[in-house]
Image (cartoon, rainbow, N blue to C red):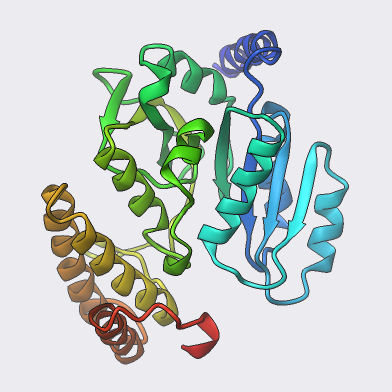
Length: 303
């Protein structure tokens, strides 16, 4: 079994090498106060990308990690001079990739890692579509190194996707405009996907390509799982969820309905299972109030 997996990985790597001359793909990873585990994660995909843009949003001393990052091959390191948010980091990386004449860019979070080369699988699925009408093509994500491939069609269209494990069409990005800076973090990717959908572009998921990714601090309880995000994240999640859902309510009502149901479920889980209930609910209320006031000037340091 192990030998078969190695052979499959070697075949995929060989196929990617053949494609590099006409389809080089850079990667982008956003750092925020990382520990040394991020190096292991980068090593899991650095051989598969043509260049790796490392956008550092850290707001404390991570010089040891940065020194290790700079020793890796292919790295293009950019300090964002403090926590400027996910949107600004993605926009800066996209601008760099465009200036270096790349057509696509694959994105990772600092806790993302690969167990195989997914770029070929993304490319194979992309070949089934009109590339000019695909705004983003993405892998599925799993919380474990082992996974079971989904049955049915190997590619399908999504309403929204997270950026981790997604490959962006940079030509389309130039037409659509940048990620929304004022959202800072949370729903930045959803807003961009909904903007793509509003203009007729597709978001395609490759059902047999996986990225290991752990959103939040998800924990299992007796009857469900809860994300256990911090109070400060609850603020941004609430404010931005309502803003983005409201913005696209008319064009994409399914997203609005789904997000309102998710919001209600998350509040119930906070009250039933999570710690820091009072602080989290207080930040949820603050986020909703700032949505109502159209206030987007709060920085994490204000919370």
